[in-house]
Length: 328
Image 1 (cartoon, rainbow, N blue to C red):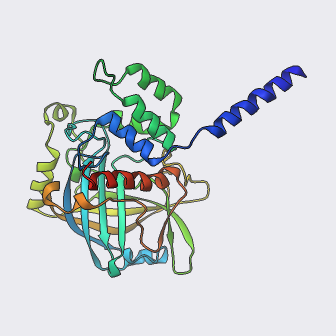
Image 2: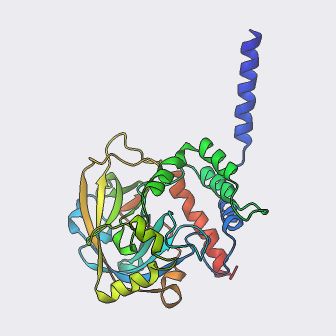
């Protein structure tokens, strides 16, 4: 009986301690990113290195049976896009085995907007904001060496299994040869909502019509640190770049609130539209620098899931956006 009471008391104390742990908030995470990568005044705290592009999105009107969004009106809609490397280092080498981002804003009728904020990996590296915060803290450079402490990184990996799938994907796949030769995933689950308010769980990705291509090991060793921006600018000058939007239709049991888990590959997939980019330019010459690319800026007919990472991105982006607008 004493052992049972002791175990019950220990469990109660543990639960109480957990309940008293303050939740992770956006300023805390943004501060951790700054402490890990430093601050480039007036720039994004994450995905700092990047460039702009412009073009159009043409949604497939057949998608109207799933979503009433004006995105799928069948009319060409203006787009401002941004490509980037993950992390807060503006001098990060383009050969780094890190995630690449493609974000774009679609201008809808009546001044409405739709944002897409995607990565070139099929899953995210955290199921909860706490994991992302802990990763930033593990990657923080040691003052003595100027590099992350390997022991802290090992301890992080051992205690955060939700980070392993993305880390494994990045380790096994070389970076893309071009921003234009990569697919990009929306990572999170969303809901398409039709005119009868019926919801359909979906996940989307954008696939380059020209095909996917990664750097070979030989190319990776010789590509240089800054090839992505001039390559994309030159490529758009030679002709438009196109990605097909493909939407997977969710089924019962598919994870809707965990971006670290991919949906089964045999899910029904529909073609939802075509993204065409006609020109790319440095950030200082484009309009993308002034856009927040908040993934919760959604058109009527598209709703977010309760994915805690998706819900957390909006306030975190807002904190970062406010800092760079103020020149910090």
